[in-house]
Image (cartoon, rainbow, N blue to C red):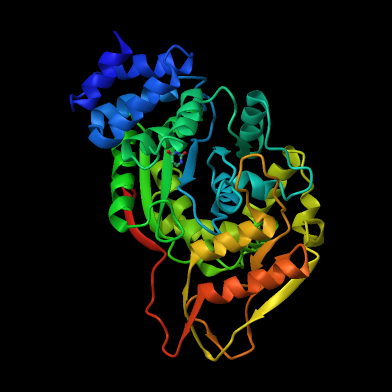
Length: 437
Ligand code: URA
């Protein structure tokens, strides 16, 4: 089967057979299909789209391009969550130990941030000594012993995605729902979790800016998971404002610790509980969502999720004393409050603008080779709807020097709108697609 024919058939809008999709992905993974042919194929998919059967075949082929882990021999059911990413999204840090405390096995493979604030791995690396580069055997052992383990992508899991994603990034073919679906799902399926819950973020601080796009991606993920026999749920959640009160690596770890202690921003606690509730019900460790929510709230309030987090940190070489002594986490030399310029209600916070501020403070990376400053960012951010008096702090900036802090202050003020009237309430969970009840 000539690669050129497969590209031509896709270009002409013909539905490809699974073996054609498998051939092009296999050939690309081993270097027989060159980048220029794969780029043409990706562009044909971008314009022609894919049917659900084609998307499922693409996902399967990419998943099987490398090692596929299995947790079927685990006594606990395996489950994981994937977020499409947003500003201040530290949910994974709380979710994995909470789900483990609830009786699930959570084998979580996460990424680093690029072009925005740090990813989950960057946040975890704020913890002194924490190692995200484990061998697969150690990853599996820690999942068995602790109930959760969080590592970075290995060279052997879904290698076709690593190659194809880099190619899509430079050929204008990232925003294609079938290609995004196969990219996300192939990695998550190769990781071996039986149940998957997706947090599809929607809004100015997200990859999917409109509800229509977020719905399209959520539906495609669910359809593909069902075709590949996985239990799945997707929550479409608000990213038109930052999630919680902290943005920046060590600052987000601090906020996650607060939530694991039973306090912290309510919105972060509520969303984490909801995502784990779906994981737990779909995995049959909880009978109903209502029951699960109560159990999970108690696990947070009694410190049982925090205890799992401590065990996971220790198992991964980190210093768990930072949970009791936050001064062991990286701390920025300059910390200053941003005073409200007038009385009013916080009516809007642009998450994208604040993400850029944190990137410029050193808390994210523009290029994959950039190093991150784990200490910098923004915290104590007043939530939308808060009433403030002139001079009261809207947030606190953590910077490497006074000059960067001053530059950030002006940009933060431009990103936060005050109004005389309180804004309407906006729920964090916009829509839920799940069989769990
Ligand atoms: N994240 C991924 O992992 N893949 C995509 O294609 C887009 C976002």
